[in-house]
Image (cartoon, rainbow, N blue to C red; front, side, top):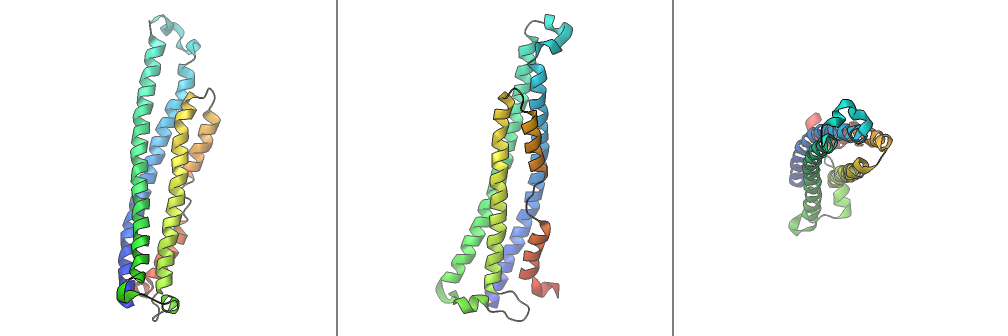
Length: 199
């Protein structure tokens, strides 16, 4: 059983690396969202011909400025989609770790009874603790990923909305308030799994 727990701990070390990547992606996504929001807010001003003053005499200026801003927005949205793909990659990686870990307990000589799953050796975590911690981390990150997807997918429609700045501000605040994964909760999962390393 100790060897299985060591394998679980290796999986948690990999998860720690994934969490560092998650934090980096979060910062990148906030920056991209902020840039996209700035352009969307400018679109309202650009579409109003009264804001051009003497520049109105330049033929096609309104269309040219609007096209340039839409092009920039499109570039940012594509970058955001790539960032979301990276988030999704982490979620899939966590899902695979949980699936492999669960499968590991079901096959061959490592098949464990319910009692053995909850059994502890000294301060080491039980197999149930390890698997439960892995599942918890996957569920938290999958939920956050789905929320991010809904926020990012709302941006294009706000660009076409006449007065979407209020909605935009609310979406930005939700994104900035992310992650909805309390750091102390993730740390407590690590502390359980690496109990013998702490002492």
